[in-house]
Length: 442
Image (cartoon, rainbow, N blue to C red; front, side, top):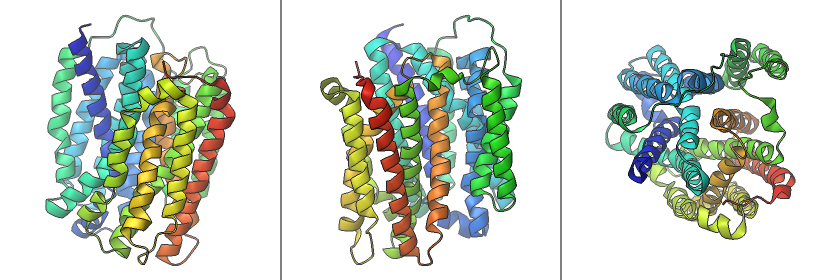
């Protein structure tokens, strides 16, 4: 494969992945405008985000397995098409039912793109090229979510929140054309059967788990169903000859540490991304655009640091970089928990965000490297599953915990302290599981 083609392939993968991450957070700064235009209650509004999470999280493992069977290039193209149509339908939505259904459909496209993009990356690169490509992929996972807040505020304030979804359509079409031209057709591989029982159990388990956290009725029943389905899924995967999620992936200490740390880290960061734009608008009277721009200290610093991670890890080691990154994120998250209107934006939000930006830039790429350590491309989907489930479950847990206090500012303080506790959990996983491996980015 020619070097320039590899550059185009990396761009296709990263732009496509960036697009779905952006849509996961672009909603956060546009919620006020969406609720006003579609006359949505707070409960109905929450489903604009939750509907996307339900299909995204529930179908991740199945999508990765289908890609292994019918070919990653083919399923990647299907995902781009579904995502483009879903984005168009969200932009055209005129009622609660239509926007929720459109977000469900859009989530299907994202569930296909997320695991397939990482598998394509591992198919297309090897050695040091693969390591640097994974670093770029990991950096994209944090930067995409942060920039989504800025773009969401920009469209909500200056144009329409709908434009944030319409813009996905031409981008997805361009990526579809470039995929057909530059990504090679999958090499013939041994025929693999779809794990039907595992697929059904994983869809029921993941969907029920997310609903038990974000649903409005029958949450206890959903939780019971989730526990039974997930337990059944694990039991089945341990016994079937061709599992969709081989349990051997969790035996390796480095991978297990990467999975656990990513779960806690994304839960904490997603909570901060979700709640902080709201507190800026209510306590500081920021517009959606100002709230989005308020994330620039985190976004810019994270980007600057992320592009240096490969060099830093070559010198100091993956584990050391991870520990420093998470510690800085913990300090930043703890500091932002003291925010108030009296403290103001600069001291209360911007300075803590700089620390979190450095921490995020140092953390997400090495976590991706740890999560795919010693795996084949068909096993890489677990990283994205942990990423998405961690974000959904963690955010739901933080929001639920903070709802126990009455005032908004006290609720925000408790939420950020809870997020800090999740980050400490990530730090413990890195020190206890990844630390002993002392693995360096090559």
